[in-house]
Image (cartoon, rainbow, N blue to C red):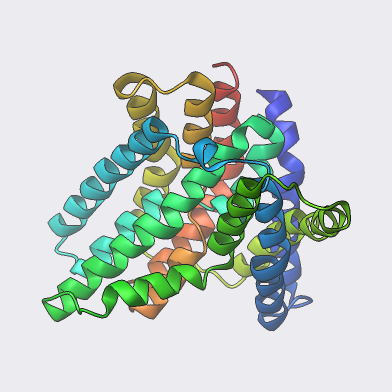
Length: 309
């Protein structure tokens, strides 16, 4: 346990460094925005392409792992929405609260952290979860909130969702990597060196950007924020463990990666959705901050547990 905690400290240390730089004003919001853009469109995409290029589509499509993760997310989604409705929350607020509890920071934090701590064998499962989060749940959220507001699904919505997915560089990088892998050609040495060099910037820059982006966050509505953080850091991995280990009998190492990924704090892109749809952005912002701070203690516990599988 102590060993795992010490291994995670450098990752959270970089987040803390970014937070301090942003909080002090040395790293202004404009700098954070451009650093995030660099990670999103260049460094992380290069890393994901390199990881995916060494996989096949069969490696990524683990039906039992996907079913277990989807079921756990669905159960938690419905639970959180039901509790929100009991508080007489609007549909938009109930949706975004449910979204907070199932969408972890897999891209910026999970990819570097889990691949290092759980080994190269975790890559297919991490990319599977990233694909589910970016395609399935982002599309589901958009469809439900559109139906709630307009009373119907616009015929152009499928096209808009497809375009939105294709504009996401992480999805495109993974798809291109899998496609290249399918050719059997292998990545040329010069291209591989370039991708390795660029991808190496993803981990420190992404973690620093996470911290800097938290610098202007404030905690409001503490009771709800605490509940949502508990849902993300405790209920999500717990339900994933039940679904993966008991209901679907997923292979232990794969189940461990699913559970560890489910234990990650709330992703920053949930705030973008909340802001775009005016669905409790301050609440989401506070939940990202609190869940990230608490994850310093909770993530090592979960990873220490799953490494014993």
